[in-house]
Amino acid sequence: MNARGAANLRQLVRDLVFERLVHLALPRIPLGFDGSFQSTMRHAESTAVGFNKKGAGSYYPLFCTIAQTGQVLDFLHRSGNVHDSHGAREFWPVFRRSVRPCRGC
Image (cartoon, rainbow, N blue to C red):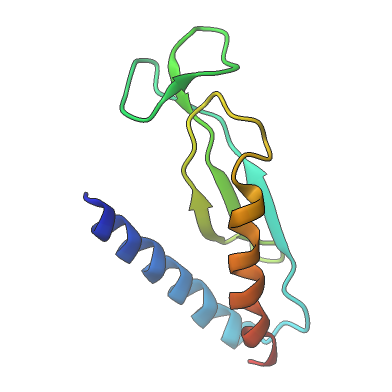
Protein backbone atom coordinates (compact mmCIF):
# COMPACT_ATOMS: atom_id res chain seq x y z
CA MET A 1 0.00 0.00 0.00
CA ASN A 2 1.36 3.40 -0.90
CA ALA A 3 1.09 6.59 1.17
CA ARG A 4 -2.07 7.74 -0.59
CA GLY A 5 -3.78 4.40 0.01
CA ALA A 6 -2.78 4.48 3.68
CA ALA A 7 -4.13 8.02 4.05
CA ASN A 8 -7.41 6.98 2.42
CA LEU A 9 -7.72 3.99 4.75
CA ARG A 10 -7.07 6.13 7.82
CA GLN A 11 -9.72 8.63 6.68
CA LEU A 12 -12.22 5.80 6.13
CA VAL A 13 -11.59 4.50 9.66
CA ARG A 14 -12.09 7.98 11.14
CA ASP A 15 -15.32 8.42 9.16
CA LEU A 16 -16.67 5.08 10.40
CA VAL A 17 -15.83 5.92 14.01
CA PHE A 18 -17.51 9.34 13.75
CA GLU A 19 -20.55 7.71 12.15
CA ARG A 20 -20.82 5.40 15.16
CA LEU A 21 -20.40 8.32 17.57
CA VAL A 22 -23.38 10.05 15.97
CA HIS A 23 -25.55 7.04 16.82
CA LEU A 24 -24.24 6.84 20.39
CA ALA A 25 -24.90 10.56 21.05
CA LEU A 26 -22.40 10.68 23.90
CA PRO A 27 -22.43 13.84 26.03
CA ARG A 28 -18.60 13.83 26.09
CA ILE A 29 -16.02 12.22 23.88
CA PRO A 30 -12.79 11.72 25.83
CA LEU A 31 -9.84 10.67 23.71
CA GLY A 32 -7.15 8.27 24.86
CA PHE A 33 -3.58 8.31 23.59
CA ASP A 34 -1.27 5.37 24.13
CA GLY A 35 1.74 3.77 22.50
CA SER A 36 1.95 0.07 21.74
CA PHE A 37 5.24 -1.72 21.20
CA GLN A 38 5.18 -3.96 18.09
CA SER A 39 8.23 -6.16 17.45
CA THR A 40 8.91 -7.37 13.92
CA MET A 41 11.32 -10.14 15.07
CA ARG A 42 13.49 -9.06 12.16
CA HIS A 43 14.61 -5.93 10.33
CA ALA A 44 11.82 -4.21 8.42
CA GLU A 45 11.43 -0.81 6.79
CA SER A 46 10.97 2.10 9.24
CA THR A 47 11.83 -0.02 12.28
CA ALA A 48 14.51 0.62 14.85
CA VAL A 49 15.95 -1.40 17.67
CA GLY A 50 14.36 0.15 20.71
CA PHE A 51 13.57 -1.10 24.15
CA ASN A 52 12.89 -4.73 23.29
CA LYS A 53 15.32 -7.21 24.76
CA LYS A 54 15.97 -9.27 21.65
CA GLY A 55 17.49 -6.55 19.48
CA ALA A 56 14.87 -6.94 16.75
CA GLY A 57 13.47 -4.02 14.83
CA SER A 58 10.24 -2.64 16.19
CA TYR A 59 7.53 -0.05 15.80
CA TYR A 60 6.01 2.05 18.58
CA PRO A 61 2.82 3.54 17.11
CA LEU A 62 0.83 6.11 19.06
CA PHE A 63 -2.89 5.32 19.03
CA CYS A 64 -5.76 7.76 19.47
CA THR A 65 -8.84 5.95 20.79
CA ILE A 66 -12.36 6.85 21.85
CA ALA A 67 -12.30 6.18 25.60
CA GLN A 68 -15.89 4.91 25.98
CA THR A 69 -15.84 2.51 23.05
CA GLY A 70 -12.16 1.60 22.68
CA GLN A 71 -12.36 2.30 18.94
CA VAL A 72 -9.09 3.34 17.31
CA LEU A 73 -9.65 6.72 15.71
CA ASP A 74 -6.18 6.97 14.19
CA PHE A 75 -2.53 6.22 14.84
CA LEU A 76 0.84 7.82 14.35
CA HIS A 77 3.41 5.42 12.92
CA ARG A 78 6.74 5.63 14.80
CA SER A 79 9.90 3.56 14.89
CA GLY A 80 10.67 1.57 18.03
CA ASN A 81 13.40 3.75 19.46
CA VAL A 82 11.37 6.86 20.28
CA HIS A 83 10.13 8.32 23.55
CA ASP A 84 6.45 8.04 24.46
CA SER A 85 5.88 11.72 23.71
CA HIS A 86 7.53 11.66 20.27
CA GLY A 87 5.14 13.26 17.77
CA ALA A 88 2.30 13.66 20.29
CA ARG A 89 2.34 17.46 20.30
CA GLU A 90 1.54 17.55 16.57
CA PHE A 91 -0.76 14.49 16.65
CA TRP A 92 -3.36 15.24 19.34
CA PRO A 93 -4.61 18.72 18.30
CA VAL A 94 -5.85 17.26 15.01
CA PHE A 95 -8.34 15.10 16.89
CA ARG A 96 -9.35 17.78 19.34
CA ARG A 97 -10.48 19.89 16.39
CA SER A 98 -12.17 17.01 14.56
CA VAL A 99 -14.06 15.59 17.55
CA ARG A 100 -15.38 18.90 18.84
CA PRO A 101 -17.98 19.36 16.02
CA CYS A 102 -19.18 15.79 16.63
CA ARG A 103 -20.13 16.56 20.26
CA GLY A 104 -23.45 17.98 19.14
CA CYS A 105 -24.25 14.95 16.99
